[in-house]
Image: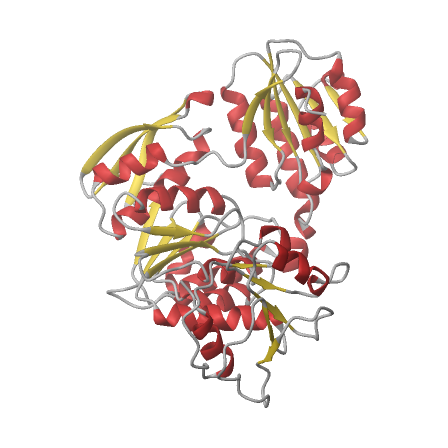
Length: 473
């Protein structure tokens, strides 16, 4: 674990001769502070973390990174350039450490600490499937190695350094999801984490509003591949089925390991069978071997997630027995949750977020289910130039799968229009303005044999639909 001495060395270049003090973790939310932790006070547009230093100390934090004079009477050590060296006498706790920029200081310590560690880092990026791949890959690696992963989707310039602060000398592997909004972001994260293995899931249109075109997104994701070391240490694990990902091999000095549904890939799958909520069954092929398996991932699209996690296990030297155990035991169903409405209808709650790719995958799962199939689909945000195209594509697929299509929001109307183009009857399509309208409509509409997929971008707050129908609100 990181010690106070390491923080001093990383930020000031030297440390006072104080007794070793272990820092139990770094947090940016005072509510998550634990005894012995360090609170990083980050000023924001609406909330300033410096206002919550006292709250963090009350919860047991021993230190706070600050970039301005705190309002409390806590002792302060100035680590800014040109400041006097820290005093040699031990100062009282809790203690504030003043720096020029708290986010940069958080990152600087993470980078310094990473360079002290002899570990292998597996970086994962892509448009869809990063978090589930991270969870499943970590589950596989844990069958042999002491493995750390970034919690939730802490995958940006703040979340990833927070994870690196948690790494200890006892860890063998670290699995890090890496998010992307603009070019250069993944390159920066790789500079912090120094991954040896890079996994790219796919290239979609999510975040195109900020990043631009799919080609720009692909260039940004390829920064992970470009940051990998050459053989024998580095390996790029690439989706053979996605041309934009497959072509990243040209940018890698590391050897490439391809996965997919094509027999030209190094690791490939066939005989895929979706079992609804019971999982999926498929056959893996690798170097002449055939492995049959059934795992609790929901939806046929999840075979790519399993392929990615298995590929990580293979390049890290695990046996098939270890890989299969990891695939079967991992907490893999992170986003979609199946619950019952008060009416008895089965609700497929996939309201965390939405892109055309994840919408299509969710509709494919709905297609596997028995009963009257109802798709409640909301706006997909941040698609930029792909906004109309993405919504039309989803609307066409919904018409082929769903018995009833309910759209929510202005962009949802594009899906409804596309569904009518391909022949879905108008009396089976309902375009509603907001979530409250959907709740009112479904309240007396559902019966116990219905299966209802609820999905839309997080900003649409479609989780409220599920909560009300389930009886939690």
